[in-house]
Image (spheres, one colour):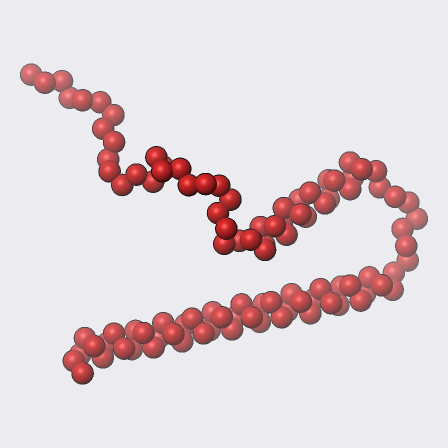
Length: 101
């Protein structure tokens, strides 16, 4: 095995180890979030009911940002907008021509 192949094998092994660490951290965060949710729901079962109700505007003021946050958390890999090809052009755009002499 040449030196270049040996270095490439080390890089692949390091990449694999880093990927497994990242996957472990994601799984750990998921477990922590799920356990917090279970605790929160079980603690909410032992609370007193509300004495007054909020109006529709008050409920929307809280629930709309909450729904947006949940959506962005769940679908964080999806692009929100369609890509605009003109913004990602690789070639240079010439804005004006030089006057020819």
